Image 1 (cartoon, rainbow, N blue to C red):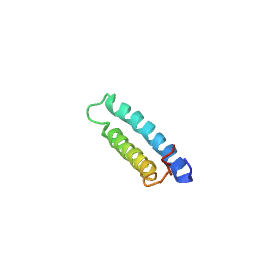
Image 2 (image 1 turned 120 degrees about the horizontal axis):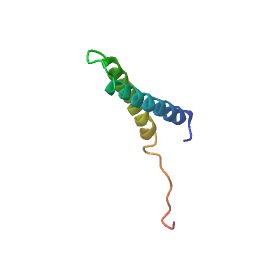
Image 3 (image 1 turned 90 degrees about the horizontal axis):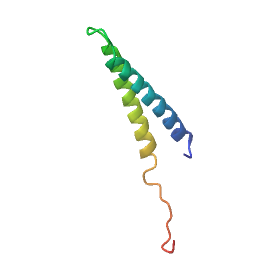
Image 4 (image 1 turned 90 degrees about the vertical axis):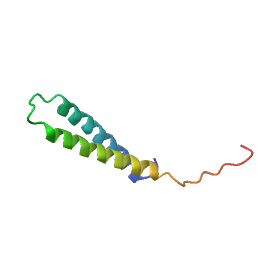
Amino acid sequence: MKSLKDILAVIVGLAAAAGAIFYFYKFVTFTDPAGGHSFGWIALGLAAIAFVCGLVYFLGHVNKEEEIHITQ
């Protein structure tokens, strides 16, 4: 992790993933059959944010040439 973008993507992505897990748990364990769907939407939104942060992090490392010598 060399840039601020990478660090920020990791921190936001992990926080969004933790939030998505928490809200999905609240959605699944909601007792009232008429409600609780807002927890599902929040969990889906946070999961999408975590996915985008993962893409930003991993696609930021594409085409980074590392010089590899034949003698190594």
